[in-house]
Length: 117
Image 1 (cartoon, one colour):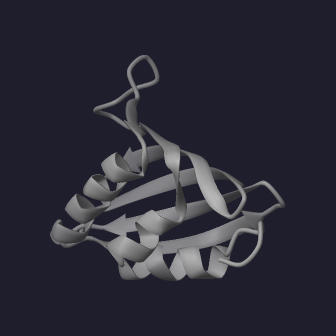
Image 2 (cartoon, rainbow, N blue to C red):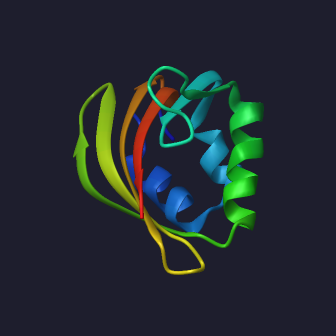
């Protein structure tokens, strides 16, 4: 990550490869990740605050034997949107639509909306 621009190709590699250290490094120290899904609806989303909490979550993702795929990227100067397919070990799939906001090369906020098989 050079300068103040966001390295989306590097982020995508870390995300898909589930390289927890590299993936977490894309988040600002005080970054926030908000998830909306069947277990965390709009009235009560899951909120993770800070890179440390996010990194702990990413480690759980990696240990869950899920494969990840990013597509349909739309990348702008201060945010990006993309679609994620998560394939679970039993073959079930989760689709996510994600918006990340970034500044100074780091994600300051990520918002996911998920739908499950």
